[in-house]
Length: 499
Ligand code: GDP
Image (tube, rainbow, N blue to C red; front, side):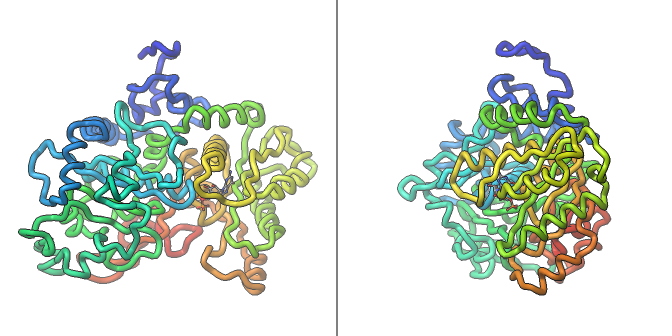
């Protein structure tokens, strides 16, 4: 393969063993083909079936995406409010991912939405949020197509039949949960066998033009019925699906009957799902990638081994010294850095919102690691709708992912993304739930918690808000007992993870 704009022969390594298409020019998005130069060679190869599905999805995005005749037709139909099953085989169906919360959350959400789109043969469009957001941070993942939902369909009531997408929430009339509760959608037949469905509220019982799927943390019983096979058959008839989600629900798709077989074929190594999909979808834009590669060359490339440390603290009241002690105890116990009186050619990369951690780790280990202790930024606090802030976060996730060993913070999606891209099982430091109140008693308990960190059981992100409901059985089940490849996460006791 040969490109005009750069004298580069693309090899299987550049294309991540066929995961990536060669249909992009090298210069348009350097991170796409340079990922391999900054990362360990992956021990996971994408299956031929996964590769075929990705190429098929790319063709779909190109045929049906914004700017095509098919898209205009679908938008007109949405504007006219006409529902009805897509009968015309040329007709395209869409999944709009309404992106929110921090960048790690957004990336996990988009990954999950993408896999759902592939499984259901829908075009994925991302609404990055009306207040800027991740727009412009990433290269387009699909050739000759955009994955960004055009404004006309996104924000403005005058243009959009969907209204303001940022306002959809659990109370929305068009949510699956509310339609099921209000009789807008009806299940009959019970218990998952011989179910038949009708969209009772629509004229002639036709499916509505769109349905909103509320899959965000804290969602209710009826919204969680998304993970039932019967409800999936119903949703298949709806031309437009809107989805608000903030996490990695891929383990939930593995537990949804109509998808299990496809997923088995796509991922013979199930625990590499995010590793493949994340490396497929996310390519930092040239500006972000320049920052990554420049920093890497200046501070990390010379070291024999790189250790990445991601410090994320969710409770303001948690004493920093306690967080630091936990990190140092983890590093000592797991022998991740040299003990006193020894030196190595390691470099340490610290990421945190606060500069204090980098300084303290430098004071402790600076003299022992020849590669130095480096912290690229200290943003002080998380900010929303700030492109430069998001760009630094993205750069740091990628810098962490170039490391040879990782220590991350429990509950943090930022850390999940770094580990998943790297294909590394990090050592995860325990964190109290972000919703738990911080008290003296909690502080004491945390200070004595052993071990200070636990090795993650796989490189997969944790699904924080699974549905425990077994639709066929009509009752809740222990999710870590139903499939050998699903376990509880080390950091979130109620979360599940693919292993
Ligand atoms: P989570 O909240 O830890 O699950 O991760 P998210 O990425 O979803 O949200 C946290 C956000 O805070 C990030 O996207 C950044 O905007 C910011 N942030 C948190 N930790 C860091 C860090 O170590 N470095 C930088 N640059 N930003 C961070």
